[in-house]
Length: 404
Ligand SMILES: Cc1ncc(COP(=O)(O)O)c(C=O)c1O
Image (cartoon, rainbow, N blue to C red; front, side, top):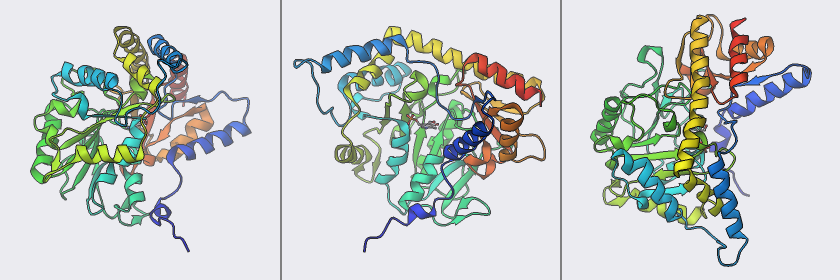
């Protein structure tokens, strides 16, 4: 008789965004006349930029001709894309990362969920609280997190690093020593960012205790302040202790197209075992490469035209973030994030839980956001709004919230 992976049975509830989706669909079915504005899930809304569409068309045509048809892509990504990434995201910023240290994939969700596979089940993870749920859930599935305490909403074998208003939503170094440290800056969900010296402290700490930092830079394109690093490899020593995850979803609107990459420097080693070789082996066995046409689209992100067009798209979302942040601030709400990030993190009114505020916004002003408690216990009492809607909807949503 077969047995299942029991760890899946330990996962509490359904995935946060499924729960939100169900609530919104139920409300919408009961009130079809209401126009709901969705500032909940972090999905982009602007169409792909013209330079990307042109690259896609070109690549599709190539696939239709015998001379230029491509079959399986190289496991780790086409050189043209790996080179463009290494040049633009790293060398241009003074980071010494080679094209062969870049692993192209179909997105940062898969990579951030899968990367734990190359580490021992005995490793202890540390996560920010609140946190992007994938880091914890993928470790639950693997059996690394211990038992769930449903009253406290925490796992017995996870080190939680609270990020609250008291520490400006930047975690302090943990008291217990972790083996794997998940960090995401600019942060989802809080929108907080760290400056170079703050991130250097984490790198120094990881080197000291022999931990690996899994650094999610999915929102790097939203950084506006000069002392906020775009990559962890801007910090000294990071190549010996950090893996960096990237996405094309938020900087270039690839949420539906799917493309991302992970950087594992060759000098990142556990004893004499190279993590780069392990991930290459894993990719070779379990992954057959992102589609050629999508990798050509990714290359166009780094063309002159692509860069200019995407700068405009990001500026559009940044204007939304600014409107939410300042609009709610003027209305008396305590808000943060939104400066180096498309997310604004707001404190819910006194006496309400995050989910009560969710229901209140949905029912009274027909605006959808994300309850902070869905990201971890320290998210209770907070609420996330995203800047990925249209400007008109963003303005209307904020104006509706102000009427509460
Ligand atoms: C922190 C973080 N990492 C990764 C992702 C997923 O990125 P991708 O679309 O590349 O899978 C998201 C998406 O919301 C995210 O917030």
